[in-house]
Each structure stands twice: as structure tokens, then as C-alpha cells.
Image (cartoon, rainbow, N blue to C red; front, side, top):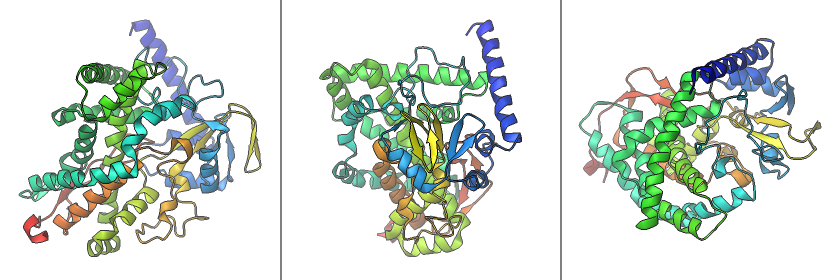
Length: 434
């Protein structure tokens, strides 16, 4: 980037941050949500948004909601989309001038951030790999992966829950699915962190440079992988995408690139944070931990409560594609709505004692952690299985697991998770468990 462009970008970012901070200081709770320090709890801010009503106007020229019913209805309403009505740009608080050039962005350019009919066509190519039947076939492999990593930790009394376990499980699973050598996983971790942080929008020149570098590295890696699978297809998801793309002239190379990249990044980032948040919740709630150790077959219920109570993805945006009335508020075409998924998951009208972590909660599956409607997370089923298997096996091996140092959280306002979590415990040998 030329020095003049860097200076222009620096000024734009400074003006953006200053404006956001000013709106927050003048009492706009939506601005406070977007301006908060990444290492502070957002849940009090969500309550401030809720206190303003089911759908409230923000001084940021958009609307915000923490209402479960409103968030759920907008996610399912075809009159809303992830992009503006003319399908240009994306819902964002990014200042003008921040762009990644011609590079494919796995979040902005994949089906994750596209509306029908393009979204439908691209998602359809991936969907067969995430059906309930396909996921059942994956379960045994996931159990083998989890037990193998726990075997490697068996002689260690202390380890980092994230680096030594939570990261390795979903990366191995998604690498198997994509047909990617698992030895590459050390490269994938920073890509996921950088792309996940970009959901907050780039706020400094340094972050912009990191993002551009990561996008370039990912494009180089997946360009080569797609070309290789075109010549030597295998029994993997990338080969299936390449084959499907060759049969559909509307599918461009950029679509294949964005789809494979988002499957890698989303395939492990969400699950890493789900596992980490689950472990942290159990360590902080002794009653829930005792219940889980006594009822390991209820791992699915535990995972649903983690998703409700402290979800990996905190918020999303939707744009009105036509004039529409929601919760008594008239929205115009292209009005944006900030949907606080994690706030909706603590709506007291739906969940009793919403701030309490209770894996026996009867309706914890009513959460919106994986969104809803046409953009419901395609990998939700896989993430649930991985987290349930990982948490059940971890606490069976380490029933006395405890925190060995402070948890270090991710530097993100949207991707919610633990970056490092030192733990200690005495491993129960697998022969004893079986």
C-alpha cells in the first residue's frame, strides 16, 4: 500500500473510531456494544439495549434488538438479507476506504454473506456433507480424534486447554473433511484468528495489513488445493465442490475459493470457542460440573446451554430489502438492524434466570447461537457433535480438572472465546474408563 493510501486509511480509521466512541459516550447502547473493550463482558450492554424496547433506533443510523422474538423473526423473514437491497456492499460499520482489493474474502464473498439465489446455489453444493446421516458417519472418527489427543496429554499434569486440545480437535476434523494435510494446522490457527477478528471490522492499519497478508496466504494455499483436486479428485469436500463447480457455469473460481476458505475457518473457529467456553463454564460452576460428571450422557444438553449462555458468535446484521414494520417500528428499505444473538439468548421472556448457567434447562435448545432461517449455520450439527464428544471425554479423563492460571480471552467483540486456558489435573487411564 502506498504511503498516501496508508495515510488516508489511517485518517479514515481514526475518524471511524472517534465517531463510534462519541456515540457510545453520549449514551447510545448499540454504539457501546460495538465500541466495548474486547476483554469486557458484553451482557450488561445487551441489557441496556433491551431496556430501550424490542427494537430501538440507534444514533448510528440503524436499529438494534436483544429481543428473542424480534431477532428470531428477522432472521427468518425473507424481506431481510445480509446485504443491502441492491446486493451491493455488506452490512458493516467499516469506514469508507477500507477494502481488501481484489482478494477473495472467505466471510464477505462466501455464501455466509450472500443472499438468495446465489446463497442458495452455493450452499447447496456443500449441504450434502452436513446432513444428519453424513454427520452420524463422522461421529466415530471424531471420537477417535478426541481420544487420541487426550492420550497424548495423559502424562502431563498441566497443559493449555486451547492450544493442546480444543484447537486440535476441530482442525483435525475439518482437515479430514476437506482432504487437507493436518500438518498444516499451525498455519490455519492465525488465519482463523485474523478472519474472526475482521468480523469486528478492521480498526487499525496494522489490522488491515494482517488481514491482507492472511487473505493472500489463504488464496495461495487454496488455489493450489483446488487445482490439485481438479486434476486428482479424492473422497473429500473440496473435490466435491470442484466437481460441482465444473458442472455449473455460474459457479466461478472465486466462489470455490471463498467456499473452501470459509469452511476451514468457520469449521474450527466456532468449535474451538464452543469447547473452550464449555470448559470455562464448568470450571466456574461446580454444581454443573458435578452434574455433568455424573451424567456424561447429557453432553448434548450441556453443549446447548453453553451455546445459549455464552455463544461463540455474539451478533450479526440484517438489512431490510423493502419497507417493513417490526415490533411496531416502520423500517425503510436498506435500514440495518443489529441482531444481538447473545442478548436474545438471555431474554428473560424466554429463559428463566437467563444469566444462570443451567445445563438441565428444559428449553436451552431455543437459543439462536447458530442464527436461524436460510443462513442457519450449515456446520451447526458438526460443531455440536465435536463439542459434546470433546467435553464428555475430557471430563471423563480429567474429573479433577482445574484452572491453573488466568484465562486469556480473544481480542474480538463478536467472536467470543478463550485464547489460552491453563489447566491441571490427574488423568484417568483409558483402560480404567473402558
